[in-house]
Amino acid sequence: MAQFDGHAAKRQRTDNEGGRDFSGGNYYNNNNSNYNRGPPARREGFEEKPNHILLITVMNPAYPITTDVIHTICSPSGKVLRIVIFKKNGVQAMVEFDSLEAAERAKQSLNGCDIYSGCCTLKIEFAKPTRLNVYKNDNESWDYTNNALGKPPGADRPALLQEPPRGYGPQGNAPPYDNRGPPPYDGGFDDYMPGPRGPRGADPYGPAGRDPYGGPAPPERFGRDPYRGEGPPPVSPRGPGYGPGGPPPPPGANQQGSVMMAYGLNHEKMNCDKLFNILCLYGNIVRIKFLKSKEGCAMIQMGDPISVERAVSNLNGSVFFDSKLQLGFSKQAFLNDVPQPFTLPDGTPSFKDYMGNRNNRFTNPEAASKNRILPPSKMLHFFNAPFGIAEDEMKKVFEDKDVTPPSSVKLFTSKNKSERSSSGLIEFNTVNQSLEGLAVCNHVPIPNPSGKFPYILKLCFSSTGSGGGGRGGPRGGY
Image 1 (cartoon, rainbow, N blue to C red):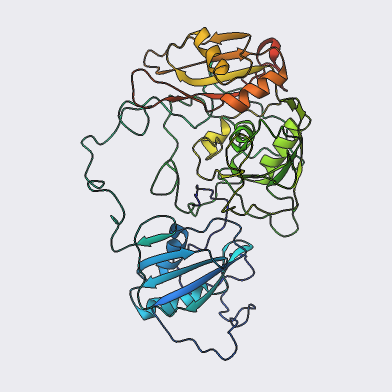
Image 2: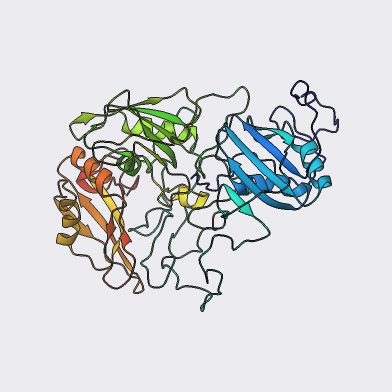
């Protein structure tokens, strides 16, 4: 089922002015109601009978279409009662309004518009059913007259405590789970130097924050679930790269897309998650698909073209698992869902959707600014490990996953007595071993002896010490 994370760079039809018109995918006010898209096409010999339920066909669905997206664009026209999305013939949705007048307003104001600039074009007709049946509230169906539909008994009971302890996971005494980028170990990020830039010449993330733990937490992503982010993005733009799946470039701009080709992968040892664990250091990952017709080849849709540029410039030619990785730009604009993926040699599916995955590290400007873009090196920075973890225990994490353990481990001593996790540096004998360790052990769960939920180990490249391969001096990365 498609997930949706707040990527506000996309332009969305979410204004509250039901009479505003939008033409050609450009979202500017047009006072001429008879603008140049012409009358909507009608099927020959067919005359629509007005109904309070609309049938919406989404053409060129470059981004996920969820109940939240449909509700956001339809609700300005009137009260929406139910939504059902189905994908048998492309992407279609039925929307039930509380009145015929509301449905007519929605049809008149939305027909022919693009949900996002240049794609997701709406074709709207009156539907035939008189009522929609919804059995579960999720991304593909929702009954707004019964928000508890499909929930287990007691799910809506109020919590006994309003706020969990700061730094903890989603429940009880879970360990800290941070997706805001690696914490500093040398006093902050004031000397942050962006890594290699793509041909556009500008890093979109700006200067870094001062203290990822001491300052206020980043705002929650839009949606009912702060971790999965089901809802559409906020209307205010935050720039490219902050959500998985930026908008198409404006007319006249470089038309390079957000999809990347990966060749030379070890077919026996690589899978979607391992590829994600490496590429997430350079931008958000939307989808990964291994090709059945080309062994060792995969396609990756990233959050924006700049993320693709960063990954290609830093990782192309890297060697790990006895294979040389070759990365290049794809002409494909996006990756479609694969309903029935084939099985890779390790038993995992050949396709995965990472939209809304909380291990993405560029989900908002604050999170993005704390990532230092570096090429592979022998040194990895680790964080979010169990508090007080020993060097031997850290090495065992890699041994248990059948990869070469680091040759040395350096744990950082925190001055913060309330610190609940450990961080440090691990060094490998070769860059190849470092890449293999990153692919296998990034985001690996480590048991939490004092809590219900495990720690999720996080890794990234470092330019510190003898293993540094970073650019920009000793403070160019972790």
